Every structure is written in structure tokens, then in C-alpha cells.
Length: 289
Image 1 (cartoon, rainbow, N blue to C red):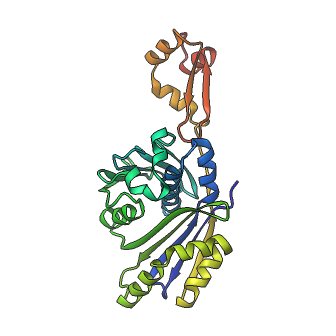
Image 2 (image 1 turned 120 degrees about the vertical axis):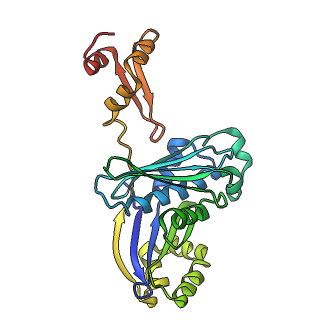
Image 3 (image 1 turned 90 degrees about the vertical axis):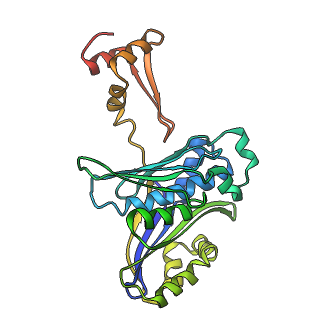
């Protein structure tokens, strides 16, 4: 259980939507599971915050999504997956490689890389999932997501994401502002001015919390809080164990059992080991091995 939340609201007399997101506890958990070095923490926190935003924008209650950030840098691919109602998880392909220690947290662009793609896959329960893909804009993940939203989904927005340590606490915050149709030039100017103070707002969140920060910076601009919802690091790998085992295939299972008494799967997202012994496999496949 975490104290992480996402606040969604309207500002500037409904000319823009805003989401203020705290994924600090979830990032702390991911850091322990994946042994993240500082630059990997920075990337993972930003990606998880994006996942939180997408999770609460899913229109189908049974919807699922995947985010893949592949910039060709030393971190490798960054993965976030989740469901609606704030259930998210993530991992980084090369999160604990020794060579990553040469990259400080501020060297995020170098570690992520910028020659690649930002991909979002949404399974809305239809025949085919929605796949949106754009080239990376910079490699800092914030600009990359803003470019994705505009180019792939037609959303004019400003995205601020950051991960930092404050008073010995790991903080992971995000602010995403979306311009509504018919937004005025004055409203855009005000939003740009507010977003230029993003780090200042993050420190306010760290000291007073998401709701107080929202009230402090936006309440006098005709702001209205619509919802405050919980976020959690959620992995359902155990409930999907049979599905995962079956996807391996009977022939591959037979080959594994020639050398081992059981089949073991390591979940990249949560680090759990899913183990099926021979008896369990024979029941699952309704045959002998």
C-alpha cells in the first residue's frame, strides 16, 4: 500500500485539464526490486508517472496498457505496464549494469538515448489494440511524452516530470496540463508561466502534498478539483502463471524438464519466481512429460 495519488482537475475556468501525480512510494518499491542506480531511478520514476496518467485516462474498465521507451542508450528499453484505476508496474532492461554508475541522475538524456521511439499500446478489449508510436523528441522522457500526446493523440499539452531527493526522501512527481478546445492565448500564457516553475511546484508538493500544491498554484485561476485517486505498484504475474507457462509451449517445456525437475519463470516487473513442478505441468497440459 502506498500514499501515492493522482489529482485531476480543471483550471482557468475549464480551459485546461491538469493532473498532478505523486509516484514517490511506488518508485521506492521499484528501486528495491530492481536495484536501480540513480539515473535509472530518474527514468523509472518519470515512466511510472506517465503510467499513472494513462491508467486514469483509460475509458474501458478492463483496459490494459504498455509503454515502451527505447532510445538506444545504455539503460536499454524502459517498460511500464498497467490497468485502469492506478495499477502500474515497470522495469528497465539494463537497470543495474555497473557501467550505468558513470551517469549521474542529471545525465538522463545520455542514459536513455534519443534515437528511438516512444510507444504506447492500449488494449481496450477490442479486436486489435491501439498502438501509438512517435520518435523521441529529446530523451528526457518529459518532452518525449508531450510530443507523443500531441503527435499521436492530438493533445496539446505541457508535461513536467522529475525525480530528486529532498530531505533524505526520494521524490517522484509529475504535472500534465492539457489545453481544451478553444483555449485562449491568455490561458496558454498563464499555464506556460506556471509550468516554468515546475521544480518550485515539486518542492511545494514535497512539503505540503499534492492537494495543497494544487490549491496554492491553481485555485485563484478558477481551478476545480475533480478527483483524487490512489496509485499502487501492482503485478498480477502469479494469477497469469498458467497463461505464461502455456505460452512457452509443450515442446519447450519438455526440453526444460529433461534437465530440470521444474519450470521456473522470473517476473521482470516484480522479481517473483513462478515455479511449476512436473506434476503441476502434467495437470496443466493434460499429458505426461
